[in-house]
Length: 136
Image (tube, rainbow, N blue to C red; front, top):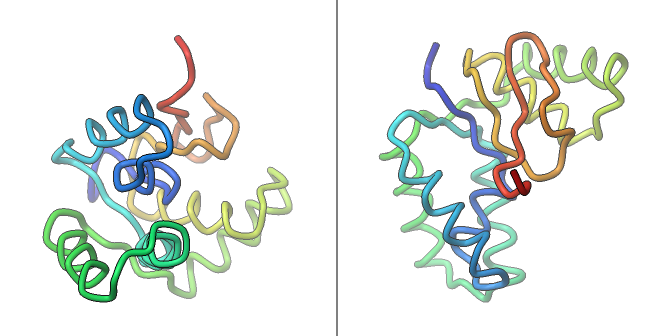
């Protein structure tokens, strides 16, 4: 196991954006956990959205990239992740991009995948998908 938690880009984005105060606070709590990992896909999606939707500069994005690589284990999207993602799409009907997130979480051996976009509580090959913003 590389880490306990895998973070989807939607969770990470809330920590940097001011759209929803409650989600921002919860996302910042999650990012403060010391046992997290992300994938190179998450790095790319977060940077793209911060530039496009929040007007971040390239200098700000470089700082965030450096922060991600210093704080988290970053799982590269590789051949095995492509194959697992394809299998997951056919079995679970995940979207194309979500299947890569789940596949990377499986490869990392995490117990929990934090994502707002997928079925809360679903277990896939030892990984439980949790929507951290869902009302208890």
